[in-house]
Image (spheres, one colour):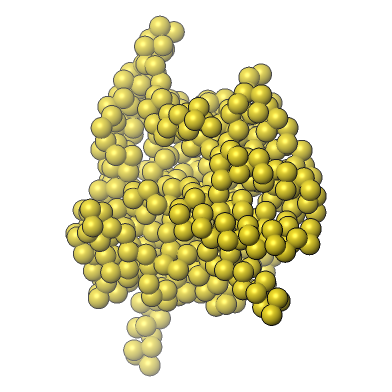
Amino acid sequence: MKYFYFLILLFHFSSLLAQPNCEAYKYLGDTLKYEACKKAMEIRGHYQFSKEYQSILDESIAIDPSFDYAYWAKSIAYLKSGDFVTWKKLIDKAVEYNPKEHLGYRGWCRYQFFRDYKGAIRDIETLDSLVDYDIGQSQNGTYHLNIAKGLCYKAISEKEKAIAVIQNQIKLNEEENFVGPYDYLHLGVLYLETEKFEKAVETFKKQSKNNELAENQYYLALTYLNLDKPAEFKSCLENAKELYNGGRKMLDPYSNPMDKIYFEDIENEIKGFTTKSE
Amino acid sequence: MKSSFLSIIIILFNFWNCNTDKKVNEKQEYLRWIGDIEQNDQIDEPEFKVCNGNEYVLQYFNLGEGPVYSGEKSKILNIFKSKYRPISDKTQNGLIRIRFIVNCDGKAGRFRILQSDYDYQKKEFNKEIGSQLLNITKGIEKWEVFKRNEAPVDYYMYLIFKITDGQLTEILP
């Protein structure tokens, strides 16, 4: 888990890591792209949203209109401001000029920002068909792209397919000692939703060991309710409440993750249980 | 009669303004930041003020707390669930974003609307859908107050509505 968080930290600076090596273009004899790249590197120190940042990238594109990096870098502010129309036009250009580099990113953003499940599946699967290497993690490092794909299948009601995809990826992640912070939780919720209660309990317990969360205890409680274990149900809800108040809950700086719960959800379950018991 | 005609003209003008966005490939003059919303006295409430100046309005995610709602997101979901009246129409599909500023008092203003189909191409929804969502959003009295170094800040926030067959299916972020 420590190893995972170290990599998450690296992903936080992923826009820096994603910077192209301009010298490589020069080496390959592509002087236009080299010049566009050198220009684009002048964005250093400017905020993604700022006019200076955007204007520099416009100049880069003017030098070489096929320089994918500039479109990608420009698109980020539009994505984060929720301007899906402009974002899509820009990221489509980046994908057009360098699909292997940007398809996974576009697929992930479709899911993370716009819950465009079918579009995300399409992008991730297209990337998978184009490359013979591991398609890698989501931009924020939270999920392997196959886990994200599985979540999209769940959202379009293909739950058995979602289970198969996520199970398979978790197995690979376990081999690499690189299970994501919410991987077991999502799989556990899928088991719960498909009434595989014993498997759900087992998976939520793995999540507890990996990264305990209010959501995990909440869904474990619901599973126990289905297994007719009221004492465990109540105890897990109390745990969920404590974890929630302590800030141990799912978090994404830009959106609300799938399977996230709210305090009200825990309270409602506790109230419902108390009313039934009276 | 004269005043109602004037009102219609103003409403139409406002709606057109709310839906105007620049195209990507056009040579454009940028504002301070992408997505900045300038005060427009013709469509914006004159009483709404930012507290720290337009040049210091942040984005909701700048403070690292994620999208936070006063009373949590479930409150927002419940508001739209109870107030939005679906228009049953198979042609009404896509995304609607309403972007606005939340000031240091948790009040919202300068609302702008952006609409597209599910292929991210601009489109106009049935006006009843857009105006309902806009009015419900405007009716939310209290938004989360964000602080930086103990001082309340102004920030940009948005809601994205997914519409399928005229039904409101998801609210983001």
